[in-house]
Length: 97
Image 1 (cartoon, rainbow, N blue to C red):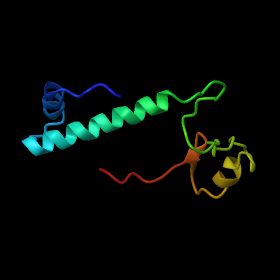
Image 2: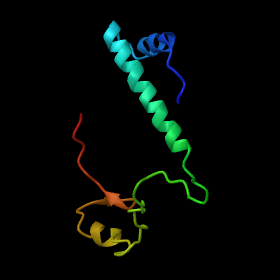
Image 3: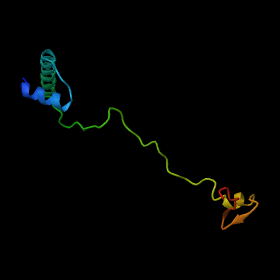
Image 4: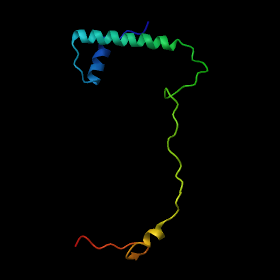
């Protein structure tokens, strides 16, 4: 049997969760928490020797691919269409006076 949850523990949890629990709500919360602790005790009794711990229920694969340059550097070809060039870039008119 799991440890009993005290009234002080329920009060403290209520303060931490910013809940104001009434008398019946406290008793229901206490019963629920005791039931959770009993279940955890049951799980602790299982033999998990040789079972690898996991972080996710399904395997996770990296969906990102490596960056590969496919077209090369097309800057010279792009700049060939520019009416005015300066230092490897487009020259554009000043828009803010």
